[in-house]
Image (cartoon, rainbow, N blue to C red; front, side):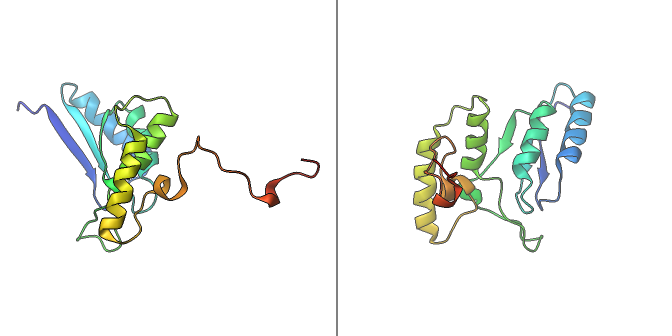
Length: 145
């Protein structure tokens, strides 16, 4: 049919990593000349795990949105796509090249947060970059430290 690329969506956020892996593996085996993309919503907190399952299945293209903005009008309670900055953060920590500067992305996400005037779904925007460690709370220090 001449299809070169195809996006597979979990618009309501009900997929799990096993389903993503099995589905994408089967699709790629059946259609080896098609480049697949995943469009994953984070409604139940599974989007990053589903990205990992997609990567393990050979998918290299993923939709994301700044701060996890978005949603689905047909699915009550559905949140937006996986957060761009959370995805980039995970890929950076794993050494997977993505060509996006996380610090710059976080600055843009903060601007967007101010523009929409409500908290975003981004955990990295809220908690910071993992390798920029904060001092441990006093309660976590061992006796004798």
